[in-house]
Length: 252
Image (cartoon, rainbow, N blue to C red; front, side):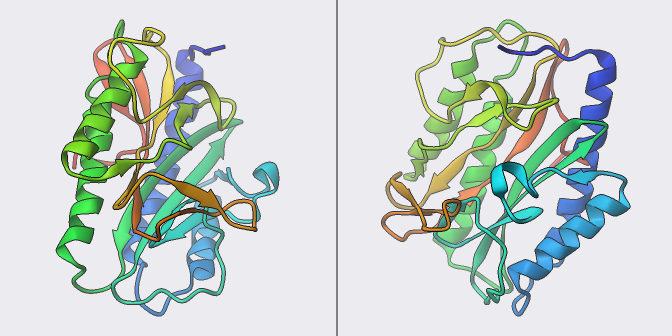
C-alpha cells in the first residue's frame, strides 16, 4: 500500500533528508587514499548523531554499520571494514537517517584520489545523470514506470547496464515502503504518481553486464563479471509543482 504523507510527516522526512545530505557532503570530502571504510562509517555515525538524527541502517535487518561502503565492483550494501582505500578506487556511499520516526536516504559514488580512467569517470557521470533523468519524470498523474524507463534509456544509450536485482522504493515511516521503483521497464505502466508520495530513486549501473551476486556476508552485492559499478540515490517528494529533491542541499 502506497502511503501519502501529511505536511507534518513531510517535514520530518525533510529534516531526516537534510541530515543525510549534510553528512554525505562531509563524507565526500573525507574520501582519500589511506582511509579505511570503517573510518568513514564512524564519521557518518558521529555526523548523524551530532545533527540530532539516528542512523537508519545500523541494525536494520542485522546490518552492522551506519554507512554502506561499496568499492569498485561492489554494487550496493558493502559493509565497512579495515579495507584501505587506494588511489584510483571508486566508492559508493549510501546513508540513511531517522528523525522522529521518519527516514531519509541517499547515495553518491565518488573517486578516491587523483585522476581515474575516462571510462570510470563516464560511468559515474552517466549514473548520476540517469538519476536526474528519472526524477524529471516525476509529476502528479504520471506513471511510475516513466521514471524507470528514463533511467534505463539513458544508461543503455551510454553503453552501460542497469542492475535489475535491486530497485528503488517508497520511504517514510519505514525505510522501504511501497511502491518498488525499478530502474528499467517500458513507459506508461504502473501506478499514477500522487501528491504526497515520497520516493527513493536509486539507479545502480554496471560497466559490464547487469548480473550481480551477493557475497557470503549476505549483504555485499558485486558484479559477476568483476567490472565497476556506480550508485546514486535521492529521496524525492511528489509535490503539486513537480519533484522536490529532499536530499539535495543545492542545485547540481
